[in-house]
Image 1 (cartoon, one colour):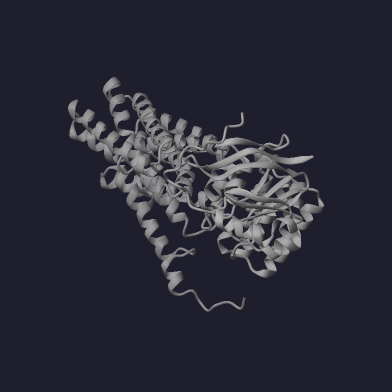
Image 2 (cartoon, rainbow over the protein chains, first blue to last red):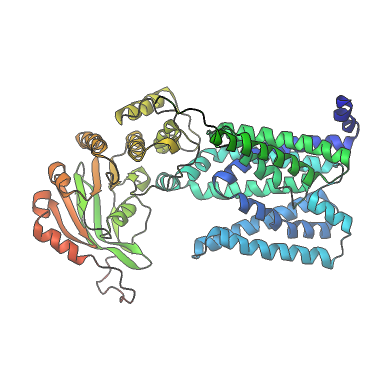
Length: 290
Length: 247
């Protein structure tokens, strides 16, 4: 009975694509989410996911439902916003988050205008926002997601050390190295790549859930960055697979399905997490000898 | 041999000078205290020496040393104490200049790191997360990182602020060791007695150099009083400085 529930979706090629894509997505989402959280940028990541919408919309207008055009559009829009916001905050007194917020709002407004003026049917819009219903995915999308994930992992490995030091002691990094600027920009680029992956797999509105929520979940179980990344990736993977099965069987869009599963894991961790979980804090046990 | 030479150096923020027209040199191997009231420009001067702040005018000569090769310990490090990283990894970051972004950390490096942790008295704390350290232990860890940096010029901004007497004594011992190894060491300090007892040379700073030389001749009651009076707030309506720029 259970095996039927698990295996039935695999009979469909499009669903198999989705499951493979979620594996690639999770591999990038785990580490990206952890660094977003450690840099206190979780909400910025969330906001950035809306910034890619006008790019995707322009790609859609130019080439129709072409995955590659939409990816390119999203990539250009996301990088442009990230760079512009970064440049404004460096050149003026405005903080980066404030300047990003401005660009994102304008960008999202622009995206909605483009989409509306050119008339998009409500079903397609829902897919844009929340992902494909019943976890279907084309081979092209899977290819794009796999390529993006591969680039992300290589780039992250290259900037791992300055990224960590830039989080824990940015002043020291600046005093010994000029790598901090490049590392930050590379990180933003990798973030955009993964937001596009999340958009393809789960829609623009909720896709970022698989990036942000697993990282916050992992924080409740370890004090070590590397372990945190592994746990976040595993959580993303589990939420992804379980969410897609949920979406398939209940016939709902993949975005909310995956995000709800991740949210459940998060709630469990808030309660029972070994590091700072509520239950452990309420019943810490007798204090130690030393 | 001079390790640092200041040429009519002016450093500050948004055109307001915090250190004004500093001229002079720090000999290689010097053990020098920088003394002055709060707001005297000590931290600003140190940031400029470490290459983190561009001079408004004048320049700093570092005897061919890349500013990134100067070990600089700020008064308030921008450390995120909640970040999940161990004492060992934090100290290992001192190897940055020799290992960079990609270099591996070998057996010899591990010995250097372990020796540094032992030298500051933190043996047994290697696997501890930095968030669990006390203020004094944190400062010991940062001194271990400076040890690992193995720099010819070391700049410490108020290293004894907020640490207890025992820690101060231990850290001072490390500074003496660096001095014996002929490294150039500058430290901003407030404890005049400690400076008199341990530092041969002193720069008394109050936005402008008040006195600079042998500690006994610098830290006179008259000079200290002068320093207190000179230290005033930024004048928001100040005119552009009339002193001619040195090319």
